[in-house]
Image (cartoon, rainbow, N blue to C red):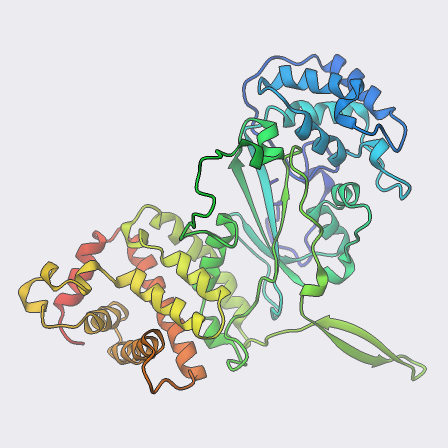
Length: 472
């Protein structure tokens, strides 16, 4: 499942069916699957076995997994993949490919031909990698330019293109009673992120992961760095968040963000996995609009709600994202980003209210904080008189080359302390203060990225240099 070729970014993206799959007739979203080792398969025997399953009349046996015709296919694939049991994974795969006896009275998309099914199963049950496509509706987004950077694309897609990207045939096969309003979804712009990931070579473990988990683990344990979005999406989102949205936004009182992600829909090329439930257009922002026809009759329709941005954003954003992505690639491995700067930038994007401000303050702490800020014994003697807050204020100001940033940090840290420690005197947080926290976090993250991409000294040396300059 690769990014569809678009050399000169035309106004409308063409999505040829052959670019969506290795098997153009199959309707399988995704392309190349990494193939692992295993026995050579008897393709003729597999096609014959699939034909027997394809001839099972609806509504099918009471227990498909115990049917001899199903078990014959499972036995061939089990030997082929060398991974043991495959029944649950095979059940998912056959339904993904349009198992005729499971179509029901509604019918649904035509099933694939047995030869196509056999070829897809042979590849899928020896896969060691899979292609995933993450589709992110840019809810509330103003008109953004089409662009490609890294494994991501921002663009508009018409109804047919969205159906291909989301793999409507597979959805209709697995969720025949649930519909998706693709025409409505096509009114929005989309961020599409594609990646190739390693997978468990055991198809059964991918079909029902819980059956293969260790039962002696702590199921109540919390991963402090757990992601809400897939890692590839978070990396892309981090790059987008480095753009100055708060200076482009014309309605800061409403939101500084240029877009939102109410949900993300992931299309996985792995046949062993049942697709996620269809996405819901009702979770996106639409507003009614009225117009009169030539006869004076009034008609109601709807359009996406938009957070208006300043003119000129399109050119600035399009020119900047490729450069930002390239710098992020060069910065990979730098200890300037060893602390979770990216994690908290994305968390701030997801947060609201005071939690948003706290998350942006944590971005600054992750970027420039160090243990010596809170343990004077770890500092050189000349620095032991400085408070932790003053150390951070100086580092922020010198990194940005902006003496006023020190006062801004002190003001924001005072708000943070009043809230965390429950002191009296905490009032409302103004729009200016909320936006200032976002702006400081963004500017600091950008400067760190520039330093890391340029091959800066180690993090400890950089922070020591900032403090050595004294008061800004």
